[in-house]
Length: 233
Ligand SMILES: Nc1ncnc2c1ncn2[C@@H]1O[C@H](COP(=O)(O)OP(=O)(O)O)[C@@H](O)[C@H]1O
Ligand SMILES: [Mg+2]
Image (cartoon, rainbow, N blue to C red; front, top):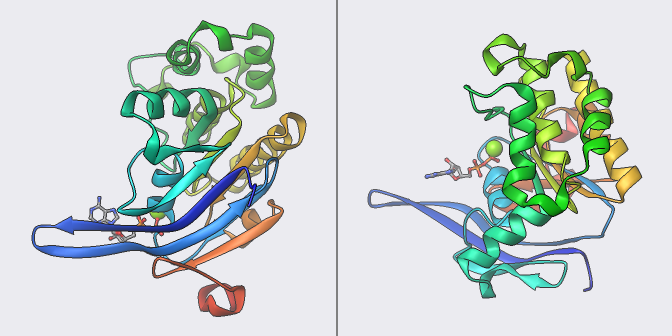
């Protein structure tokens, strides 16, 4: 008990027509504040669903997520949304940038959504510098490479200094060089700000960037030796 993030017996089943698709079948674990945890497991094992629940984007069928003492389930939708904007930075495999806005505005929009209290112009510039974006800020997503787009998405996720960063295969579409920039930035942010980072990855090298690996399979957390995909690496 007392972990910064606690997942307690999470269950989630999707209903597609009349068919039930179980995604999480009783997931429990704790993550300490400032930990960098990587999550691995075969495709379909429930990793993304877990992150949606951890981030308050969807509700569990049963079980609960407690983050920094707050139980999502007991919060109203408005409170949950507020907490998400204030505390959590998301990065996805698809960059999800707004196509009509340039890089600067795509990053700044996170600050606007979270409210003026979080604005820190010096930090904004530093993040852009660390991510090699300073000369790209006037470009729209269509004028940026995939790696640059993901670096913009990462800047957007980090600019409010969230307590928690949830990254779902952030390097899944990137070449080695861009992957390394993204991974190093996540690590640096984790270490400098004491941020709690959870990152889903398929890449064993990327998984090693964390302090600890959580293995998932068929909607469960399993021991490393029960993850056959992993033990072949
Ligand atoms: N929106 C959805 N509707 C129906 N089934 C879904 C949906 N999202 C995921 N699933 C199913 O839930 C299971 C877990 O998916 P997911 O959490 O995306 O796993 P992973 O990220 O590990 O690949 C899979 O069987 C998947 O097909
Ligand atoms: Mg996924």
